[in-house]
Every structure is written in structure tokens, then in C-alpha cells.
Length: 365
Image 1: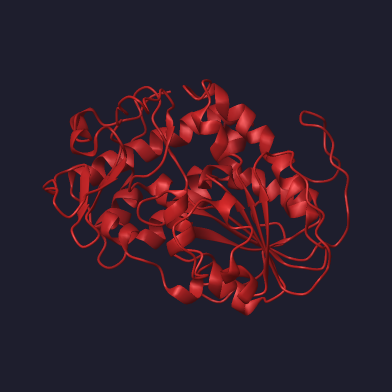
Image 2 (image 1 turned 90 degrees about the vertical axis):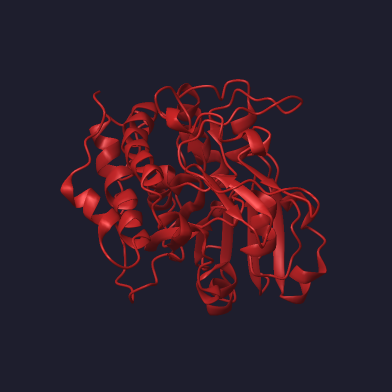
């Protein structure tokens, strides 16, 4: 496939006055990573991934060269009342399911799984990762539950959750199982899938994406399907990932990662000199944080050298924007068939069961 050519409508989203993130988020949700795009890729996950990444790469290469202010919009924190804490306050007995490292790309798969499990999609939009776009920062700065920046495996016994009447369930592997009863209070379920696959020795090209797509079924069964049927569910993620396959990075940004020691972000100590901002490098002096911006193919150094092309921690559209699906209580129970078997009933689309919402209620953008 030839490289995408950005149309006037795409350029208008970059040059119009005012906030640009809502328009670009809508483009990603309803065009690039849509059910229609998956159909156009002959329902091949890896083909769908590569097709969409060519569009995103073309757009972000232009954004980085232009020093676009969109990255400032991505870095700004969203309104507090629109995040997970706000959702729990509005729905005290609801469940929140965090699929670690799940991205906007996987939304057609999540919508289909919701349909198959008898849950209508009430609203669909974008969530937001923290700065940097990693898990610990999300726990401390986006959950809104007064937690420190720690990993999700350490949340089980936290007093902050008990004080909020939040029951927590951690799924270190896709097949882990928890029995969740109907006791009152909020539920927080955290699955390490698909993020745990990004460090596999097989995470070196698009071939892994087929397995990620299929593996979401088991993660969904163990998490969303374990929630009592009469509760609404928010399905979201802590961060996405940038896919740095061949020809999907910006060669003009080579070596921008050197001040970061080959990482996608680095926090500098009080006695260290912060690097100067430049195309491809975002610097937050208050946090003493530097992050890669745009399609920079960073080169991790030993001892943490990695050949994975699925990476997070930087400031890009696909690392920062995350799925935000609010599901209705289940209307019926269904059994799952194994991946590859034909499912009964109509194929789900993003519009299936999507209820009318007030402006601003679809996600936290």
C-alpha cells in the first residue's frame, strides 16, 4: 500500500483555531480505528494495524515538524470530574475494568466482545494517560483515588481503596480467575493483558497483533464477564502504545532520545541539567520530565535493551489516548466460542446500542 495522503479535512483539523484534540480523537475513533477500517482490511488484525499506522505516522510526522500545539493539549490534564474517580462517584456500584496497555486500535474488538456478552455500549470515547504515559503515573495521577505512583499488583491491600469502598481484583495473567459477588460498592478490575505481551521476544513486528486481538477474548471473559450482570461497566486503559514497525517512524528524529538514555521518557534529578526542547523532545521543567514527542524510534540501551516495536512512555496520540467504553448492565448471558469459530447473531458495530449522551460525556477529551 502506498503512503496515505492527508486530505484537506485532515489538515483542517490541525490548522483550525481552538482545541484540536477533539476533532483528531473523533478521526481516530470513527475513521482510522473503526469497524469500517477493520472490514476494509478484510478483518485481518495485522493488516488493519499497518493500514491505520500509516495514517497516524503521516499525521504525527507533520505535527512534529510543525511544532504543533496538539501535544500541549495532550499534556494538559483532563477535567477531574471526567475521569475514573468521577465515573465512580456518578455510578457508586459500577465496575471499572482497566486493560493494561490497550489502545484505541482495539476498540472494534472491544465493541464486538461487549455485543457478544449482552452489554450495550452506552457511550464511547477517549480516555487519557498520565505524564509520562506509563502505568505507575496513571495509578497515582489518573485514577483519582489518592494512591501513590505504584504498580497495580501492589493495590490489593491499599487503605485508600477500602476507604472509598472500592473492591480491587488484579489479574496478572489473562487466565487468572476471581469470583466477584454482589456486595455493594465500586469494583476495580485490573488486567495486565495486553501490556505483558509487549516485552515478548515475539513483539518485533505486526505478527504479534493477531495474538493480541485474539487474546482480548480471554481477558474480557475473566474481567468484564465476571462482573455482576446488573452493574454498568467502564472499560478503559492506563496507556496505549506507539507501533514502530518498518517505515513507521520519523528519520528526522534520529538520536533525539540520547538525553533520555534511549528511553521514551526520563525524570531528571535536581542536580542534573535538563535537555533543551526541540522537535521530538518535550520538556516539562516543573516536573523535571522529558518525553519523546512524535514518531521517534528510540533505541533502549543495555541492560534494558529491547527489540519490541510496541512501546509506551512518550507523548504521542497512540500512547496518550485510550479507550473509554461505558457498558450497560447485561441483558442476557451468552457462552463464548473459541476464536475463529463463527459467532451467532449480527456483527456488532460501534453504533450498536449507543445511547444519546450529553456533549462531553463520551470519554474525557
